[in-house]
Length: 307
Image (cartoon, rainbow, N blue to C red):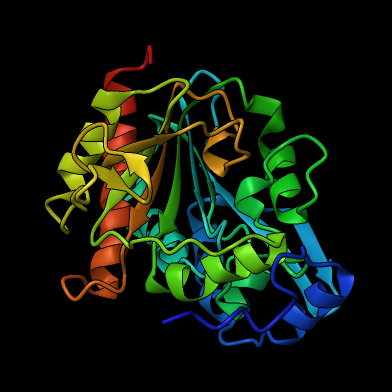
């Protein structure tokens, strides 16, 4: 059966301003950044330094972008970066980052400098979407002269120490809506045919193909496997169209693709992906898997500081 075309645009023709406006008019607020994120960050000020590293001013409202830092920052300590919510609809990326700060970060006090940006795309968080209001994917926009203010703000935040970061973990999800909404929308926006894909059931990681760190990735996989299941390769030996290089791990060229995990020169980089729509996982497990991944990433980097 032929799938109906995406409801915006003309098949085969990329969107212009009119189509983007039509798409934006369909997006509705479904949850609150202030209630879900800002209110959770507020009590953390008692133990961490919290600062506004940017502000998104859109027609629909203004969103402060907050970063959480170690209270006693010391330049000689290794710097660990945790990011979440680059894609606002990927819920455990945001709440996993906040849960890590709430429950686990304090045990690393005095051993690392920690920087956490838990919700990079608050407009998309509220609308449970992948893009910003201009139909841009922030996770393809971490590059010079970025067209996405969400990406540009994070790049400004890390610019002073991008060469000193030891580990960066970027927290994501892969959901059923990737296949039902986001891939069709992307194809329509770009005037291309929509190629059906397969959603992997379980947790997996995306390593940097230009500087792979297989032992680092496997340490994270081993820790997460105690919390939730790891995604198997499909019949082609792939996950989301990329070859599986080790259990639960694929590789992308993080920097050249403009992905968040490539925003620094950290020797240890990874992107997590959990599957919240799995019948074998709960929202709590997804958050716990993100926390386990962050802790394992930090522990490995501390044990192998040379990278």
